[in-house]
Length: 171
Ligand SMILES: CC(C)(COP(=O)(O)OP(=O)(O)OC[C@H]1O[C@@H](n2cnc3c(N)ncnc32)[C@H](O)[C@@H]1OP(=O)(O)O)[C@@H](O)C(=O)NCCC(=O)NCCS
Image 1 (cartoon, rainbow, N blue to C red):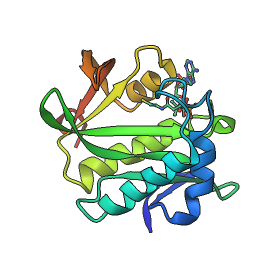
Image 2 (image 1 turned 90 degrees about the vertical axis):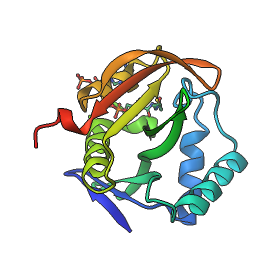
Image 3 (image 1 turned 180 degrees about the vertical axis):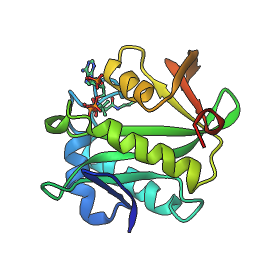
């Protein structure tokens, strides 16, 4: 089922058929350099199980990014409920297969997910928690309007807290 669409991308719910493609993306040490370590196939399988077990809750999850030009699954972008410093937040996440980096595709997906969160899911505020060394990810966050607030400790790591409020966007 399609969640949202842009000029070049389609964002849709994952199915079990996507497991191999996502496992390949998550197994890439370069792509995962700022996200802990590469995931094994079994870890991605667990993640899929978690997504499918939680998807009917409130509609917040990571979605598959399909590149329309070649109809390939090239990554994932979505919104996940997250506790940050004891407060409930909605966190945006994104990951793309390395062959597709540097074409503005993550920014395009993140814009669409941001708008979906504000317009369809009723979010008032979206955050991103980013490794300070992850310049590409911070650029994506800034390009879609998130503002750096401060560094915080999250899950025992120092991360940059980026924030956007719905009220900061033109109506
Ligand atoms: C972060 C990620 C999704 C960005 O994907 P992308 O499609 O290359 O991003 P975009 O093309 O939309 O680029 C966004 C901006 O970042 C810049 N950028 C991209 N890669 C960069 C890099 N390695 N260093 C510095 N800037 C970079 C781009 O130039 C662009 O800015 P510009 O339009 O002013 O030139 C991709 O690098 C990725 O999947 N990384 C691994 C997973 C990850 O770290 N996810 C984020 C976890 S918080």
